[in-house]
Image (tube, rainbow, N blue to C red; front, side, top):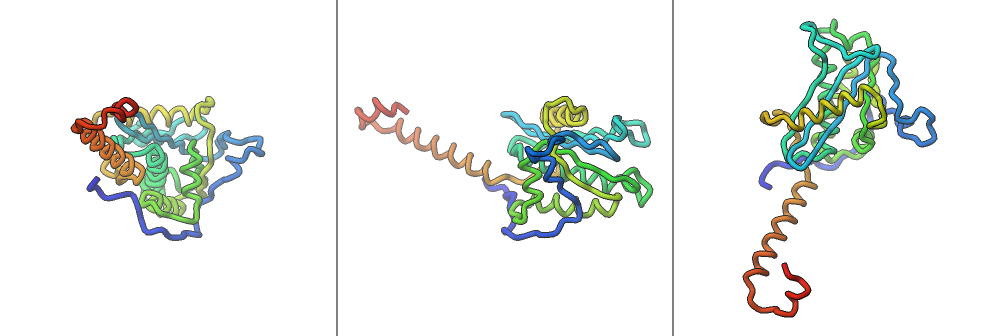
Length: 231
């Protein structure tokens, strides 16, 4: 609980250099949740269980996962430790997607430079946070900064919502990568998000409940209330 929190002073941020395709989430859109596979497509995902969290990013073009100069697939997994929320995992994956675009430009001759890039994310909460005028999370602020910077390294950048677990191959690969990162026993990524307020509140509630139970167990009185509240 003494860790720094994932917060910044609440402020407005009006401008974005990238596009967020809000129509991809609309129930009136017949192509809602279906990937637009033109150009380069980056799929992101986050994963969480009771023990750890992870994020995954995969870069695809023409129906295939892209490879680097060594022939390795551009398929990335990140371990985010046990205190990262699933929302943070999803936003972190967007942050890493922007970082990969920037790093992939290689002085203006890399794979992003002459391409229109679409980032597909299956978390509406993460997309709405990136589209919100109000910013209160350091992770969201950092991700917005990197996404804006990434637009300088490609022909165009947009974010679309994709329906999860619907057979979209890129999303399925990103989901597998996120779970692989989650289950990795290596040390968490050095850029792992700071502690979320929700996690801090949850830990405080657990501590308060443990304290209450200990005090209750120490009391010898209150025989009748114990019939209704045994612990």
